[in-house]
Image 1: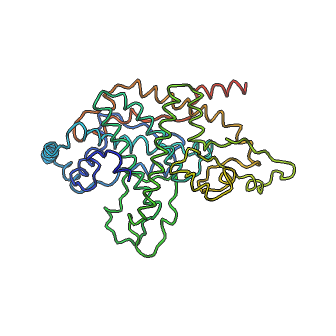
Image 2: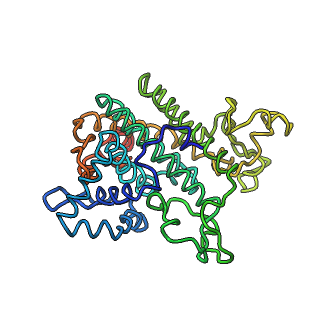
Image 3: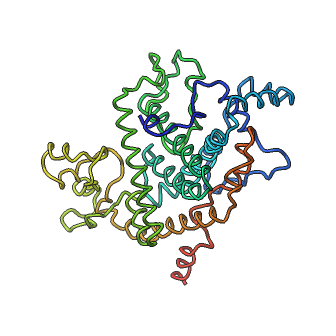
Length: 395
């Protein structure tokens, strides 16, 4: 499992009652003297705003917050147990960074990811977009002085994959409304997302508590996501230090499905521009590096070679546009330029922020403070270079 292969931060344990209450205290809303979070972007949907609601607090957290003396005693006890160490604090603050900064991004910019990038509303697409923003934070966190950089990066990656595994189990086997499991065992690790839908999530019938999905299937999916996480990270790191062209190629491969890698299929006089031509010319990009995503031995066993595998629908929803929709490729250069500009702009913005904005105060209960300054901006901006070039082209 990924959570075993990655060095886990002890603060992410679900079995510790104290950790859950410390996290509840650290997720308290900012005081009136602190700046409030900026309003959501115009592209945010009502469902996205609902998904941002914090989880309900436990009775102990409510009791402690109502009594300053009890809160001081509880935090002192937590400090004696080691929950106030720099590594533990980094793990909890990384959790707040992940849940407040990375998770909302697919829903905040859903129109762009689905319409401009043509990503289907699936969990795979959610993972890709969230992975991009985890990488953006990772780049800045790596620059923190040691050992803070290592602690924050490890905590961020740990929370990311624990959340991914929790969501994978929910997708493979949704919880039935008739489940007999206690509510605290069914609570998600982080807030839900409206970007993708869980099939048969509301089907009634016999109880199907979470965690009953086949472990072999969960393990395989987690290995696939680990490969995708590592591949995207390395390709974006390379593009970051080389050139915008290299970064645009990484965007094309990871966020745009490498559509058109073997050329663009145009409508022919015989096939015309009918919808049926889409099935005849179906083609997707196959990763010849192998691994868990595309097992070369399995491809060879099926027969037909690479061309037959490219024409096999893997159910991902990401494939080349059919001939009748070949004009969609015209907007691809602008989409890649928009994403490259977004990545560069956000990395520069994060670089200009002081280390203290990421490190926090180092005190229990302040792990969520100051995150409003770290929020990502919109992908498209009217004052951006791509928008300026578009206006010049029109004029």
